[in-house]
Amino acid sequence: MSLHVLKKVSLFSGLRETELKEILKLTSPKKYRKNNTIILEDSTAGDMFYIITKGKVKVTREDEDGKEVILSMLGRDDFFGELSLLDGLARSANVITVNETNVLAMKGKDFLKLVREKSRVSSNLLKVLCARVRKLDSFMKRVSLMNTVGKVASTLLGLTESEKQKRGRTAEIEKIPSLENIAKIAGTSKSSVSRALQNLEKSGIIKRKGRKVTIKNYSEFKSLYC
Picture 1 (cartoon, rainbow, N blue to C red):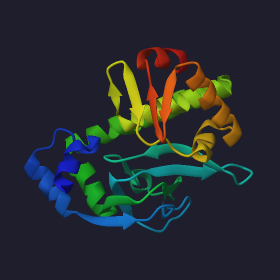
Picture 2: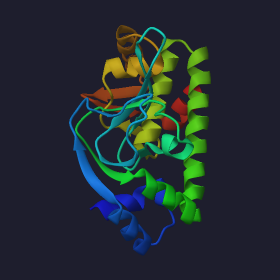
Picture 3: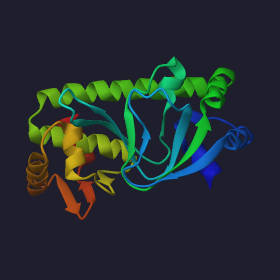
């Protein structure tokens, strides 16, 4: 099962199965309950790299008022913990579980050895880091210029992309984050998020059923809020 997960991790794209088996030997499975902190911002303790095999985590920081700001949401096949291993500095953000989460943990020295010795891994890592920087920069520019509906819609767009669930004209988020977490990503309030979602649904742009959200016309939605 874990080997199957590694095949889907972008960091290991293009590696042979024999190489993936060797990488799997360097990892150990760990389980975390909901709301557990895996990485603490500014911490110099810990020397681990993590791959998510089940569940979801939020990457957060605190603003000047001590309020939580969500920088991104990561799910199955995503990885985290690489930055402080690469530059040797303290952890740059908190990583907290959104629900019960399973990971494969790798020692920092083993991760760095992979990056040094396998050009495919280092190349993949650069691509992922560049994509993350571009995505965050684009998101910050968009939300700074948008009204509340636009900010929430843009957040949904980002969540849809992270879920990797575009299906033809439609796109789905199987389990939308809580109103509180969406508000922390979009930089607004829970009540504003609630009203924005209602407006988007009344406009026929999205459809909600429980925790599931369907964007009816993904390309049009993206052109409006990207």
